[in-house]
Length: 137
Image (cartoon, rainbow, N blue to C red; front, side):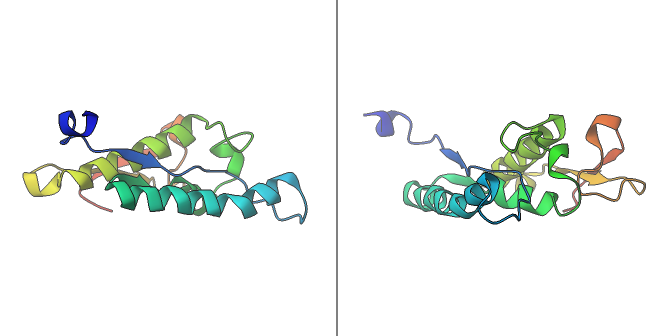
């Protein structure tokens, strides 16, 4: 009955994330990083099974921490900072825009790019060194 009533509602699944570069073998953080891909894979599989919008937050954060320290996004790997929440919000916004074909309907996609001074993907959001760019990816 719920599916019948909500047939036009799209489910959104966010992959779990762990914001760390842990390289020490046997450490707790390393074990989590080694275990997490199985959970991410399950969420991706469920999104395909149920036709859900899927956002791979773990892959996004792993890419972001190539450019900034992990603590810029989460001080203890699972609770995002302001910049971490902004990265999640941007990823979710882009996934939702893609799902409703936002640009084809005349919308202008907004993206956060680093300012020339910051040099990192999200820049330093808290200090306002990012600019918003329209229609670029």
